[in-house]
Length: 334
Image 1 (cartoon, rainbow, N blue to C red):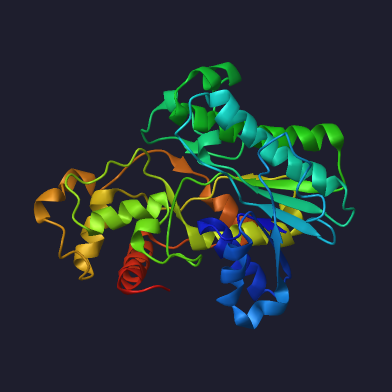
Image 2: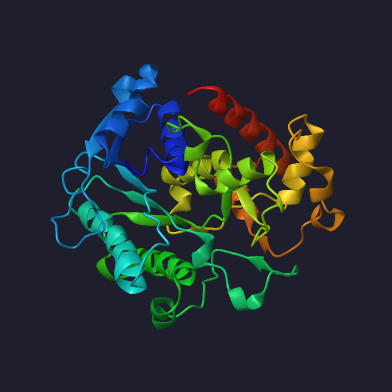
């Protein structure tokens, strides 16, 4: 079963599973989206089973995953509602995120066949903001955001979001430790994620947030966006890592911080677009030399390559592939 399978990251994960001949239960709140997704993949129609799920972040309803997990050997939980438009950080961000993870784990316990759960977390659950963005440090799966629960609840929505990712992931690890279920856990904490889309996108205005930033650069936005971090990952590599973590026994109970070896900036994205004939709308004056060589801390990408066999796309290839596709979307639906 895959949750969030019609989203940006989840759709790539599903495609990777289908290519391996693995049958996928597509758990989604919109059965129409799931059917549209399946219709685009007629060659895999026998491997896709759409399953409608109600709001899984609310405690006021029965566990919507109990029936969905029946017959499943593994689960990839890639769904994660995101909204900064909240009045109460704890009640609207943190508690729903924690509950959304817990209901999947509790449902998995009821299906003895489930042997592994792969959870999409976020670099937000790893990063220590007080450390700064300077070079000379490498984050690994052993690192955790030091933000306390109380600090997260009392902060603004952006910091609250970081807290929600940390405490939702922690809930999963605590569940494994306390309940000792028949399955193990693998978590991924990716940074900014870019790349071509394979989920239904009919116009560029509907691109996900990170890809929309690339599109803004392509469109000549002035000034260029400022990247809060210089670490990133291509969605194609992230998806492959999820699937390899599901099928490789040795990955059990590991926590990964997947990222490409090279750094990114939006000035670098602009330069790449111009070098590949994709930057006609971008004024040269927007590209500052000092922003073309982003530096900063690293993420332990080597663990993903060594243990999961994933080689990473370069930022140049990611930008070129993405913008070419987004231009095609602008000219008509996928």
